[in-house]
Length: 499
Image: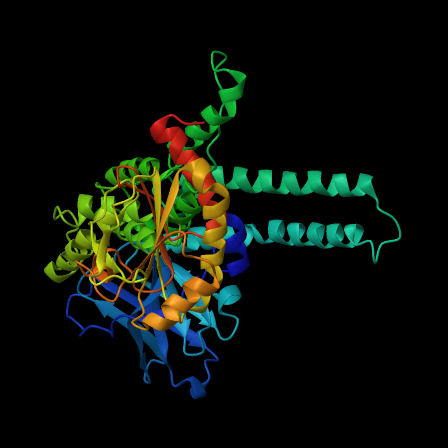
């Protein structure tokens, strides 16, 4: 099975992750519910007769068995007393050459191939579902060759360094021919689906069909028609996907579609919208335990690692919805407890929430007793709280920029600044403040505080910035000064009715 054909027909990126060893071959049982025999011609002795059986799961590939060599019969066999889960599997050589095969209804069959051209030489004996698709893929070879030929000619005609003149007529003809080839390929896939509706590849062919977005209804204002079409596309993105078929999680397709949905379709949406849309999708997969498991795991993991402001609210919501309620049946008690502790720390720091109040001493003022100042003490509409360090190069560059914003926009926007230095070197701290003319905002030394703000405010590095409104809600966090003004103005419009 040619991997290029696979990519062209299914738009699936193969080998997106590294192969990982998951398990060795299980002890042979008398009842062989699953048995795969491989006859590999010209397999060199230098590879030590090592053959592996791998499978796709989400965006990765895992080795699930070692296919053992029998020196008497000169073939390789792997078997088990339980059937393999349906999906797309991989026959892998010791030098990472590979071919794909389907394990689904046919659980006992033989594969014949010649090394090293495994993809082009592979044959299946006793597996109609594999041979059926093998014949389909072989028939598609001519289509692939046509596309390659058109692509080469297109590059030649559009390369002005090579071609003497730009042949626009021929270029348009090539585009039309390419469109026609893809149309023919789609028609062949549609026929395959019609003739073999339960076949794994039919499920994938259907899932790959793009959602057809209709024109917006006439009653929708012109200014909102594009938005209407986007909402339709978003809400129907998985219409062609059988979300009750666990087999698709053992192919690369579900991972690819889910990743594209999050990265492209939902990219510009507000966290509250993303939470609702993803929860709705996840609920649709409850009928397929493995799809449900992957959808929950992937989305929580993705947004937990996101560096986009506000995305932490997404994973917190989904983790509370599925891990802390016990719906994540695969999660150990230890994993659930770790989520619980992490959420308790992160949730108060989500945008819109009120973080824990604390105070630090203002030691820049020469008084007999230190004056303690709360981070909630400002009467201004907005308070910018900056955790920084004298030894932090990024802080030294950022603070003057924050001061520039404070001087230029502080009065207009109603901004106050509380800068909290984490260093214990008081003289160096005071010198930096004086040298950079930062005396006109509140400077506190964080060597002591009424709470452990490193933990409660998640200050693990510097600089860390929070902006609070007059109700002490977090407006934004961990931003650079050049984006502070538009964010504050947006918050003003959406929360206080400002312009």
